[in-house]
Structures are given as structure tokens and as C-alpha cells.
Length: 114
Length: 118
Image (cartoon, rainbow over all chains, first blue to last red; front, side, top):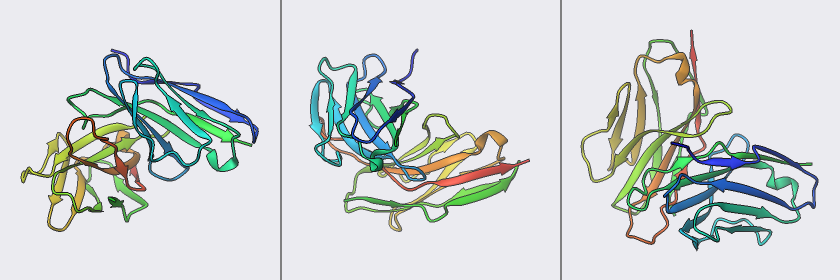
């Protein structure tokens, strides 16, 4: 079956622009996670959804970052007024409700802010 | 808060040989999972192997095995008969084991870049 997909795969934004990154989880996966991976680093947790409920957003670095999952499937990570330090790969992962230890990752969106 | 430390930024191994990647972690939790993930160049993260902390037996998946030392908070990955396709960044990761509705987020180390040479 289809895995986790993310779009766009690459995004170049001028500093100050708003961007929206999309994640399509595996069908039926209740849990959805966003991670940020800076160059040469491990991924860092941003936010977590269970169905449409955002249960944890403690990893969002500032109020410029906003995530939603209105119908409990597709999720969008929005970054307002992008800064150079936002340049990173943004990874989405999903998992089944009863198998939370198996997170399936998407290919990521590489965001470059110029 | 949990921390995961990978002290080897880069390693290399000859094809068909064995290599061990190191990982240590710090936590006050007693129930948790540990993972090794592989991230090939420009490709997505995939799970290599998982260990439940309550299990004393070390996990094994084909050529991949772990040495889990709970008291020492150490979780190393051994790759036997290394293949060119094993070239990738390897991340050690930690997850608390909790009840329903809780956040099952992964905490990653900084990674070890493994190169398998022909």
C-alpha cells in the first residue's frame, strides 16, 4: 500500500514569506507526528496529533509555526514569516493507534529560506 | 527529559565485515522502547530494529542485532556481513512507553554516518 507522502518535496522561500507543508499519512493511521531535521542533526519533535486533536505542540519553536489536521487525515504544517533558521527538512510520520512504536516516515520536505 | 547520545559522528567498514555503532541514553523511566533508524542519502527514514526495555533478550533482525545494557543505559547496533546498501546515516531513538492518549514522540540522537567500502 501507499506510504506516507509529503508535498512539496522541496520548497525555497524568501525570508518573510509564509509556507505550507502537507502530509498525507498512511490510510487508517490515527497518530501523526511532525519532526524538524536540521542539516547534520537528528530529527526533533514538533507536534503530535491523535485523529484531529493536537495533543502536544510543545516542540513548535515559535508562534510562527502552526499545524492542523482538521479531518483526522491530511495534516498541514504552516510557517509564517519564515526566517533563515527555519531552513531544515520537515518530516512527517504516522502510526496505528495500537502500534504506536512503529512510526512510518515520509520522505520529508526540504525547506530553504533565502 | 530524555537524551540520546551517539558519540561516533562517522564510521566506515569494509564490505562483508562487522561494525558496531554506539548509543547511550539517559532517562528516569523504567518502561520504554529503543530504536535504530536508517536514513539513506536523500531517502526516507526506515526502522531497522526495535527493543522493548522490559525484554532481557537482545533484538535481532537478520544481519542486524543490538546489545542492550539497561543498567548502563547503552544500546549498540551490530551490523554483520556489511553490504554497500547499508551506507546511510543511522539514528538511535528513544520512546517512553505510556498509556493511551499520550504522546509517543521519538527522541533521536545526532546520528552516525556509516560508509561501507567495497
